Each structure stands twice: as structure tokens, then as C-alpha cells.
Image (cartoon, rainbow, N blue to C red; front, side, top):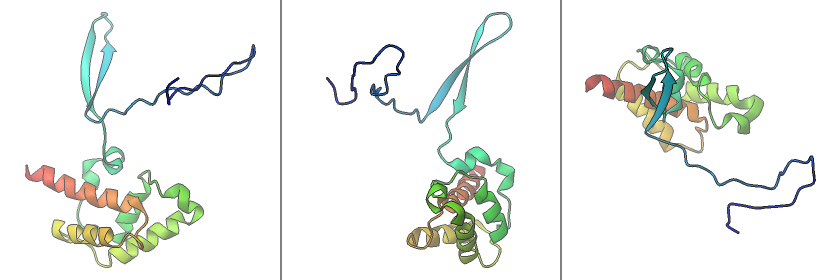
Length: 148
């Protein structure tokens, strides 16, 4: 018997809750989607698997300047933050506090956003909401892609 599989005997009509399937690793590069057309032929399409949750939720035109604390707060709310379940009802208050502490004045350049991102990364004991990091990284990534 392997480590990933547990077997048990079950009675008629009962679900087998003790059977564990081995976990499959998630793909990180491309996903090939087969779609069939009305004439019966199949086509192959490659779609991107999102690595940054902010890129998945927000279109590129949302990343415009200036970046204010209120805009950062609203964009961060649209991202699925892993800290939301841990903070519960206090998540929005904590997120607003972190946005106000990080951005006092509007940020107009990529260098200012990089400084804010560096400050957030340098103080993990204060900045707990990961959504802020996702938004700032999406701004930096968007700028890097526009330069290339």
C-alpha cells in the first residue's frame, strides 16, 4: 500500500470516504483547450494560467497613474487574498489601515511604486494583507511589459 492511498471496506449504499486519490500537480505554463466547431473539427487553443491573482481579476487599463490609497484599497478588494479567512470581519479595516500607511500621497511613477513595494516587503510584521503586494506587483509587471 502506498502513502497516498488508503483503502477501506464499505457497506452497500455507503460512500467510501477513506479513499484518498494522489494529488495532481497544477500546470503552470499553458493549458490546451479543445473546442469543437459545428462541422465536427477540433481546434487547439493555448490559454495562459495566471500566476498573479491581480492579473487574473483586473484588466491592464485599471493600472493607471496616479495610484492613491483609495484606488489601492478598491483594487485590493477585488483580489482573492489568502489572509481574508484569517482576518475575517477585520479584513477590510486591516486592508484600509495598510493602504493608508503605505501610500500617504498619490504615487505618479514606477519608482515610487517600487519603493512602496519594497517598504511593504521589508515590514511583514505590519503588512499582512497579500492583496496589496499583488496589486503593486501587477503595476510593476505592467510597466515592464509596456517597456518591452
